[in-house]
Image (cartoon, rainbow, N blue to C red):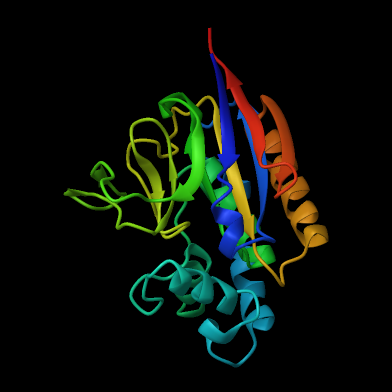
Length: 240
């Protein structure tokens, strides 16, 4: 059985220019934390204030569009912040980004460097195709990272979901515990999400860099691609 990552047609109605940069990694070694990656994180944390400027984080040209995207599907941006807004605010307050495991740390490096949302999932925990789509009226409850109770997505919010249910809610707000990346992860896919004014050229640079970092520090077989309205689907894995 072949597993795909797809962008549903309905996403392009409100977000016609959305782009996904996808890094697919098979047979990797994510088991031993590499201190060099922590150094990369500290470097990007130190460089962030100059990129963000003196104005409010919420008004930064690479973050404000995510607030508008959240408003379009009914989420209150002050209560539910995009992953990139949450990450940059934490760093600007002086908090170091924790090293959960190599894959997570590497995508945080790229997220901070390019000021763009990045996330990832354990491919072996996925059930069926993964689709970026609009949540329906009766979605299954899902336990998110750091939460004790399972709750269903709200109707109309944008989610990544497989056959079991949501694996990431409110586009990039929070990921599900079920498919999280761990030290035992052998196969994964990472996604960089771009909406204007983040350009295709910027996304190409970010996805190239992430793929190189994953190959350098985790080994395995690493490929990457860009999804858009013309190419909204990519194969993630072949399962016997």
